[in-house]
Each structure stands twice: as C-alpha cells, then as structure tokens.
Length: 96
Image (cartoon, rainbow, N blue to C red; front, side):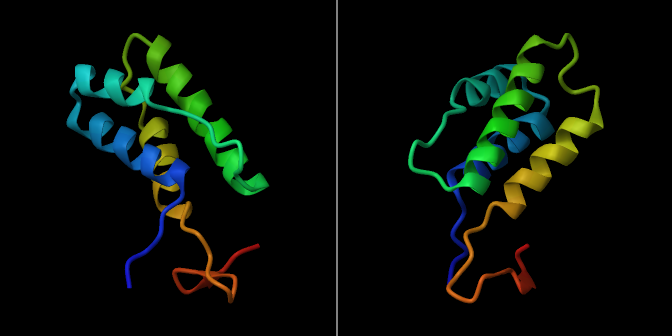
C-alpha cells in the first residue's frame, strides 16, 4: 500500500528536492508552484501557510541554500503531511 501524501507534502518534497540540488532555476520554478487548497482541513491549511511563508523567504533571500533551517522545515513538511487512515495513525505513530 502506498502512502498518501497531502498537497502540502507533495509541494514540500518538490521544493526540498530543488533546494537539495542547489539549482536556483529549479528552486525558483518549484517556489512559483506553491498553492493553497480551499477544501483542506485545518492542519493542512496550517502546513500550506507555513510552506507559503518558507517559499516567500526563499524567494527573497540572497542565499537560499545557506540556511539549513529551510531544509529542516521542508523535510518536516514533506514527510509529516501524510493523511491518516481510519485509525488516526500516521506511519505507525498517533496523530495529536
């Protein structure tokens, strides 16, 4: 069974890949794709808002690859945005 990722997780994974590649053009393309979801639950809305803030910072900074905090935040968003199943569990741990 494949893990289902939320929209914010997919977007974060794409940005993280571009950020890790250190390819400025690729990063700029992925940052432009950051969007919102009108029908998202509250948790997903918060993740999308955080992702939009990170994207804004990466767009305006002179050195987008210089601060590891971006990578850490993107990784967190990329791999914690999985949708819970009926049990409320995500990847073997309980959601709060």
